[in-house]
Image 1 (cartoon, one colour):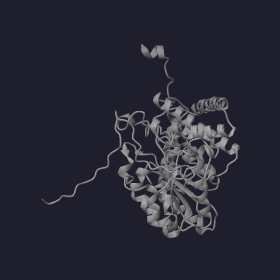
Image 2 (cartoon, one colour):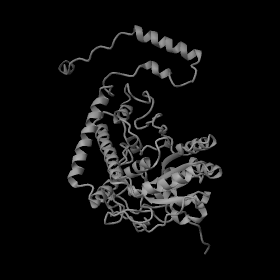
Image 3 (tube, one colour):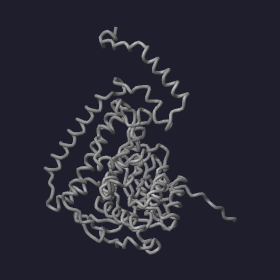
Image 4 (cartoon, helix red, strand yellow):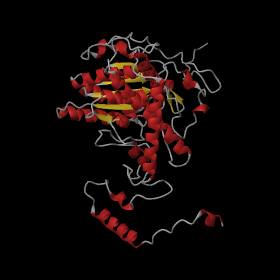
Length: 427
């Protein structure tokens, strides 16, 4: 009988109604992975793409050669940033469910990736995030009001009402605009890093995509250019196990780690516990130092878990066990850093509770202020004339004429009638 080839279709380890199964996740013991010199050749450190860099052990101690030895005060700042990011996310999710914004994406369970990396990089470094790194804005001191206003498309919207919610940007904070097209930020980051090297700057770039986006052509284009020109860039691949409803095996994670794609291009690949704040910080610090010393790019795979839905348009209970996130073997990044600080004698449950209440009050106050600049249902509204701005460096004559025509129409249009009282509307 003639043998026939069979098509292999990846299958998630568990579906709704089944017990979570994370036996496929290869986890190294905390402190077990060696830390090479930043000048090491990519071919000599391929084991970093197979193992998993971890610092925090089961007793909440920091162990091993990757221990970054941060001061307790810095760890407390990191904890504060992660907790603020989560509370901000939770509040915006509730606001979307109330119909006060149209869309939102949370980063629950992935806060250490953005916050630890943001703290390990310099403020002058250029960041090219995806839509789950709002912690970068928190680390660099952005007022949450500005992020909320963008989600409201109001008069303080940085995108002037032209983008869907969560597509933030921040020129002065060196954070590039988020794009809804997957993986575009990877080649953009590489190109920016190449330009910085050409100009002789010591600034580097960093970018983030999800593991599903690594199947996009832009990922491979970026890796090729980064490797050929040894661009000073950190390319972060956040493996949170799910690309919306598609399990990470469909992007290639079933046969090899995503970090192993780095050595294939001649780029160091490092696989790190993405829920270990200290490990993420240390690996980022290593990659940044390597880039600044003309060592070229690094691909970092952050092994983490998307605890929440992909977005407010998603229902994860339809494709994975409802409480799967509770079984994630690498725990919760906020809880782990909190427990580490408590083990050091630098934190307590009482202090954590007080901090949570303080940050909740801060988020609430920011939302009240953001609403004062306009909501989806009430003014003040954006000036329609802003549609002509930021399109051309020098506005062409035909647009200038159209702008003046619209200005004249707005000046002669009658003011909108005041809204009738609710009792009168019911009649």
